[in-house]
Length: 144
Image 1: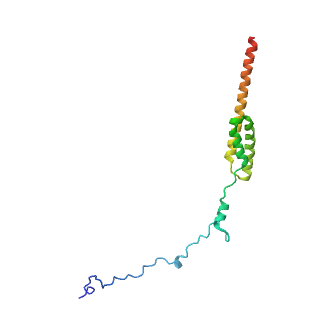
Image 2 (image 1 turned 180 degrees about the horizontal axis):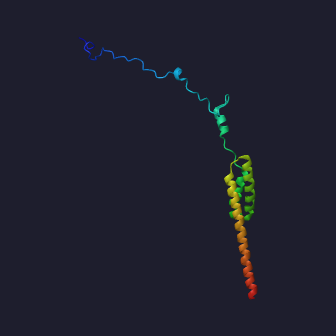
Image 3 (image 1 turned 45 degrees about the horizontal axis):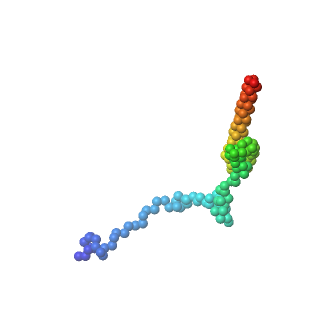
C-alpha cells in the first residue's frame, strides 16, 4: 500500500485543488469606475510642470512698499526726513497693491505706520522743546 492509498499525505500525493474564487460584481455588472481625467493645470501639448509653475508663480512685491518700509525704519537715523516719504510711499503703495494684487501689503502698512508714528513723535518733541524754551525764557525775563 502506498502513501496515497492510505489517505496519508506523502511525497507522491497531490494537494487538493480548489476552484476559482467566486467573483463578486464584475465591472459590466456595476459599470466602469469613473475616470478622473487630468488635473486642471494640465494642458495637452504642454508639459504639466511649466503650466504648474505659471499657475502658482509668486506674485511680485510692490517696490514702493519696500521703499516705504525702508524709509519708516530709517527714521531712527534720518528723523522726519525719512518719515514723510514713508507716509507718502506707504499710502501710494497700498493703493497700487489693492489695484494690481501685488504682494507687500504688510510692508506698506508698517512703513506707513512707522512714518506716522515717527512724524508724530518728532512734532511732540519739537513742541516739548518750544514749551520748555518758552518757559525758561519767560522765567528769565520775569526775574531779571
